[in-house]
Image 1 (cartoon, rainbow, N blue to C red):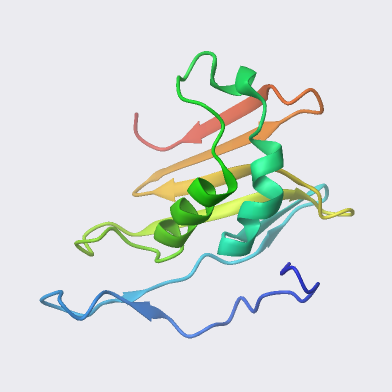
Image 2 (image 1 turned 180 degrees about the vertical axis):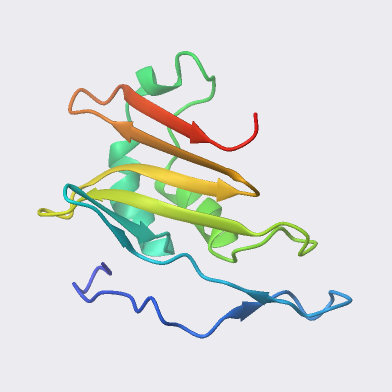
Amino acid sequence: MSETGHHRSSHSPPRTTPASSAAVLPVPLARELITERLRLDPLAVDHAEPMVVVLADPQLYRHTGGKPPTRDELTARYQRQTLGHSPDGMERWFNWVIADRLTGTPMGFAAKLGLTLTATLVDGERRWRRTVRSGPH
């Protein structure tokens, strides 16, 4: 859902790789996914505002390293990720923000690269609750 409260269309026209690529291939867009308890919204730059709060606890990075992103850092990251592909156009990226289906409150993120899907939820104490990974290891 955008900041204005409108749902983003899951039927947007396909994006294409940059004009500098040898071949222009369509980039399929991530679709909204809904379960009984969760909603996975395709990543948008405007998700940086609520997600900076979700990712703010330094304890989240105790085992993985790094530090909580600033709003500007997260905005820049989401600008790159929402392109849907690597700079050379060789990898396709699918990213979602995981939200509570009823309240819309962001609570994690999911990403698919190749055959691997990774989903991470953060609990109320802002600690990694569960990371689920599928695909080849």
